Each structure stands twice: as C-alpha cells, then as structure tokens.
Image (tube, rainbow, N blue to C red; front, side, top):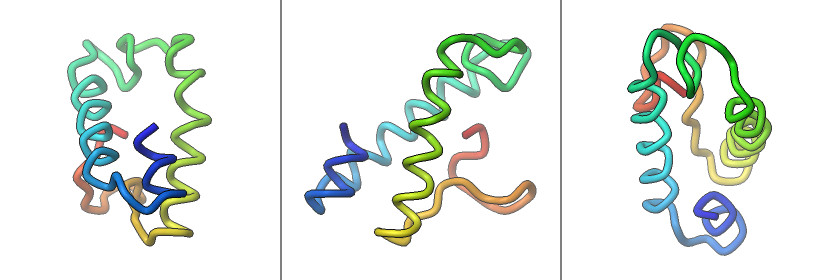
Length: 80
C-alpha cells in the first residue's frame, strides 16, 4: 500500500497523498451524507475506518504528517 511504503521504506509520499485525494473525492461525492454510501454507515466504512486510524496515528508519529485535524481547522482533506 502507499501508506506502508512511505511509512516503512521512506518513499511513496506522493503516492499516499494521491490515494488520500481519491478517498476525499469519493467521500465528497457520496450523496446526502458523510459516509462512502451516503447518509448511512456501511460495511465499506467499517472496513476502512481502522486503517484510517492506523494511518493517521503512525504518520503523525513517524513522519510528522497530519491529515486529520480538529473540527474547524484547515486541512486538504476535510471529508476524511
């Protein structure tokens, strides 16, 4: 994965950001809600959420890269 490559091998930052942009685009295009399938949480959300938490925690700790921020703070990925 792009996340693991950047985290462990030190390359792939741009690839990871590209993946975040794709996820952001999918979440923004969901109709009527904050989840992948719209207003209701689905299996996709349950499967993706633990990986998102691992990515957020490991990248800020090991790489100093933060893509999830507090509500109202500026970020390139507000839907995530």
